[in-house]
Amino acid sequence: MLAFMQLLFRYAFLKQQVIPHALSDWQYGLLVLSTVLLAAAGYVINNIYDVATDSINKPQDVVVGKGITETAAYNIYIGLNISGVAIGFILSNIILRPSFASLFILIATLLYFYATTLKQIMILGNFVVALLLAVSVLIIGVFDIFPATTAENQAQMASLFSILIDYALFAFMINFIREIIKDIEDVNGDYNQGMNTLPIAIGINRTAKIALGFAVIPFILSALYVNAYFMENKLYIAVFYAFATVLAPLLYFIVKIFDAKSQKDFHHLSTILKLILFFGILSILVIALNIKYNA
Image 1 (tube, rainbow, N blue to C red):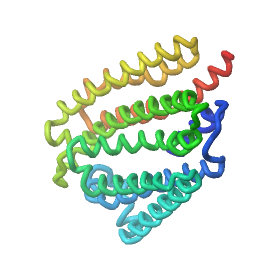
Image 2: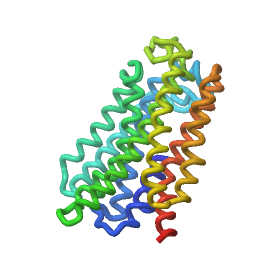
Image 3: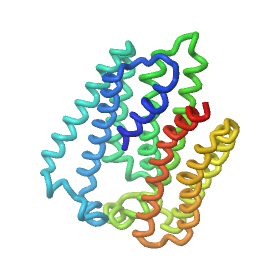
Image 4: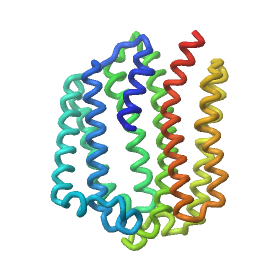
């Protein structure tokens, strides 16, 4: 899904603009690969440290200790991280911005500390995971737009970068809410491991109300965004798409969370948020096609 999102932004949106690109196609492919490798490393280290909680919450999904040994998992983690950071270092030098390699190191470091420490801290762990997803959107602009920006195209490039920021903010908000819902879903295993997640600290019902409150924010902002950009530019197909795949499901989430009680209920809500995130990102393709059709 991460690779799909990055390829979508590049080829469905940025490639349709008359702008220079800092990365060639194969170099952009390396950027996608590097991001995916670091994300995969994050999943591996998270699975290593989550064996005890997953044995309670999702015993059927436990891999470390069953499918592979912990030692093998650590070796895979190290290999994925080294590969991801090395590719990031190569790309940073290709665009003549060697200091940008520190971004890949920062991502790998945050994912490690999330798995080992941050996820046990109320709200902070949720924030970090959501932020890293947003960074995976912004990194497109950092490596493909920013290095190709000149005084002549600065206004156009800034406009395109601002669209990436809009999508990054959307991804952050939806994923942040989803992380809170996942904490509710996993409350039993987390409690037994002594974690201090939000539902453990203040209870499931109060946490659900907070998630509801947070969900209202992207709903309102998305509605205003659709009105300000899609309606004003007469992108009616994009308006219908946004209503059907983002606004209506968000409203459904807000309504359903009132009655959510069981782990099954919260798992369903988590899936709804994942779909909203997916279709929200996919909207960039719909917008590009709508603009082309209108033109």
